[in-house]
Amino acid sequence: MKHYVYVFCLVVSFIGLTSCNKNSDPAPPPAVVGRWELNRGLLSGFPASANINGAALDLYYFESFGSTIDVYSDNTFNENYKSVTVDDASGTWEFTDNTLTLKYDAGSQETYTYSKTKNIEELAASAPVSYTLPVSSTATAVGQVQLIYRK
Image (cartoon, rainbow, N blue to C red):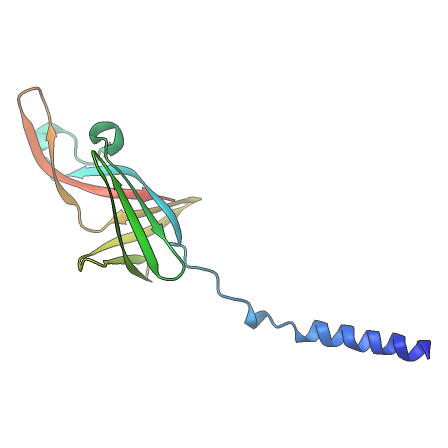
């Protein structure tokens, strides 16, 4: 009788092992899922005499501007802006060929390019925004700033 019990336990163990299927494991979330914090702004389009094109600007230090983007695995996101006031914007997202598209509930959309170098992950805004920068105590220069987020 003990022999049958041992054989029965052995058969049940083998059935349990063979019923595990790696194909039933859920797919890992896309690389863009997680919290992204505004890291810097890259300057471009300023007059050559200003000698600042390509420079990275700490927008929080310089403008008291901060932002986070929380990208969730259910294809929704929430963006939080911090300046003088704090505001949230939410919507849905798509990620294809290293391009993250944020579709805001308000109707607009933004695209970012995802990159990973060594262990540093970044989202770079595809469309830089117009930016006015003081270059002296009496003069300003107009150019663009590209927002760069890091995970």
